[in-house]
Image 1 (tube, rainbow, N blue to C red):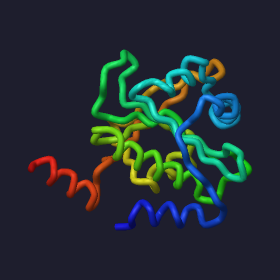
Image 2: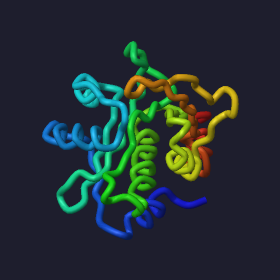
Image 3: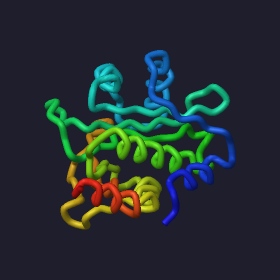
Amino acid sequence: MANPTDDLEQATSAESIVFRDLQLADVPAVKALHRDLFPVQYSDSFFNNLFNTGYYCLVGIVNGEIVAVASARTVEPNGKPSREAYIMTLGVREDHRRRNLGSASMVRIIELLRERTECETAVLHVKLLNKAAVNFYHKNGFHSHPIEGLCRDHYYIEGKHYDALLFKRDLHSGLFGKIKSYCALL
């Protein structure tokens, strides 16, 4: 099994990308990136929440510009802690796609969740019609149950309902997960 660090080095070989936690000064650029990337329009409260306990957001920077974003939460909408991390958004600016930056972003947010949380799994939703995203998440270790994973009318975009797939991934699979599980027994 490949080491996530090796995956990141390979993924960023086309260009130099630096990932770091979201900073307050980044919010305008991250809002603009979300508007460009996602059909769902996020409110100011979404961006404010990214600084709250249980919320995580990484930005990917190339040549001083934010070109990638990955956000997750480990709290339920009601504020209660969760054992599942929910990946809220993950995307790469269009002019930087096809360079493995999406996979690098996924590697980094998964590493962050492993290091900073007690979550066992990561979950996310993807629009059923977005075949490229469905393939991307499969490639990055996510799986969806063919029946239970189908979420009818999950998204409401521009006056129309869309089905989604619920994807899930074990955060501690492979050698790292086995070591963590063994250590938890000690």
